[in-house]
Length: 148
Image (cartoon, rainbow, N blue to C red; front, side):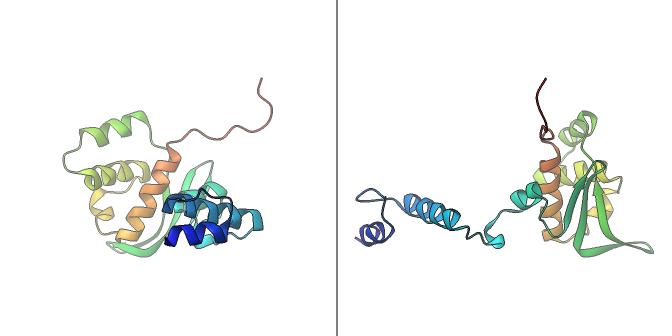
């Protein structure tokens, strides 16, 4: 009953829409109005657009400004440069023991030139963001210009 009322209010939906149909319709309406809340966008989408406040992608790789800097000896690590992983680095990750996060940290260590022990001290939010950047960097760069 509730979805039928919402369907009438939104218009353009089936008589008994699913929750997904309703959310999709709302997103379409917001997009048509140009109403886009930056907090609603995924980190990956913000990175793709070049609009993530803590990530900058350039020819070197992904520069990530950590939410919570980590100490390594006398050094405070505030930013990580994550380079595009190579096949050799991916193999090293695959060969590593442990679960998904442990393997991701092995790949992250390889791609940053940092020790796993240093990265083990990262906050969960920073770990998640760095892993998102790693995933983003594994995609081929977008083509620009005419194809030959």
